[in-house]
Length: 343
Image (cartoon, rainbow, N blue to C red; front, side, top):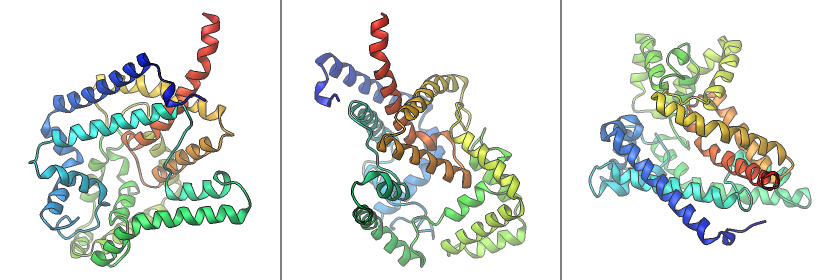
């Protein structure tokens, strides 16, 4: 197998130029859309939480203190010291995105290396990822679980102290309700799921609204309220929910951006996404016996399962695209000798 050191000078120059171009294009697109667009598409709430962190109010929004896990707001908190300018966020994100692409390139010269979700990691380690006897694999699983607990334990302790329950997020119940109510598909997936949520909330009875209002200072109880409504809908309409699950998965893996963007953006997305998805799937099939590829497949299945239960836009799938790119690159690398011989 080739190693990263095998790059020639010309290849390194091309790679650096390509990464630099990617950073500049991402920044240019953000500048073209403007600052108002940036703040009104989800980042405003994140930045508000970041400002609360730097002001000593912790990871809280009003009376809600377990809205999101802390890493991304903590990253944004570093930018608040220099004033609220969106380029202070856009530029580091562009650099991180280029770094991800670089890692994908280096992996495609060696082998796929992933950081799977905990459940997938535990299953994969127990069945495919470890060698030796079952007790030895079980010990490996236990070490992996301990590493995960060491990472999340401080956050769980904090949320237990501020909310009364050790939760990663107090929005799980609400997200479940957003994806499982009569009006989930009133706007989604063509338009933002936020519009569907607004439509669904508008259909909630005054009595239920008042009940949710009384839970304003009890975020876990409020999450449980939404979860109960979601489960009630699932029990009442199981066949409808099952059919919608496939529609959600199709939305998450769609060749069309959702929420819908301009025609130019849609064409650019399709031209880049479809070849990568096709070649990546072929690569997954060809290397299906490889333990690392099995791990990637499990990640795709995990994403599909979560999407089926909750919901997803195409942007939520972006972390999986890195693996498709790796597998697509492997297919291209395999076909190069054959193409060269025919040439």
